[in-house]
Image (cartoon, rainbow, N blue to C red; front, side, top):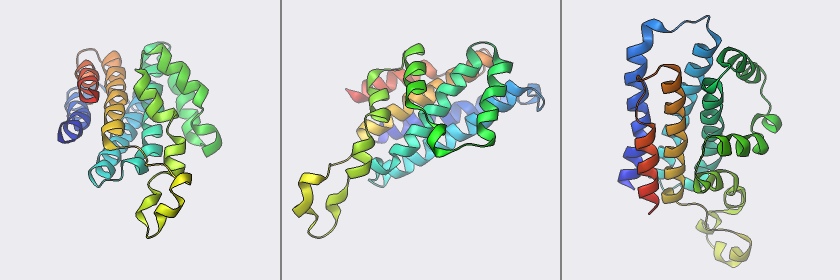
Length: 198
């Protein structure tokens, strides 16, 4: 698990270095700069939370955070890909008045995951894990075993952390599309996540 934690943490190191290099070029009035910076900060915070919960043996509890990380990372890719100003304005508008029922549409995530060649394992860890989250990790209470047929073991860090690394790699890729050469490391994260999964 130590390697997976390091791999996931690599995104913050790369983003810190990249923003240090491009800082003077950032424009508070540019919608794409604004959207990508806000979403990059969210991606790193969510990545940190996934790592912290995984280290504490609570990877299953990180699943909703992983879902948020997937959404924000692929939205960053979408904004950086083309028509960045218009797409950034749309993404920022969504952030102004979010609602849990509309904030994370699964169909949109599937569509973007396919467009950006996200590995099936990472998509499944996000969209296929709701039952694990809702019914997982319930055996920890006294006499919990009596109801084991209604519960699930939950997702392990070895499943959650590689997915987090994949999505953080997409966040890095989005930044590197916007500021070419300043945010390297996406491919390294994707390759590392693949090796870590076995």
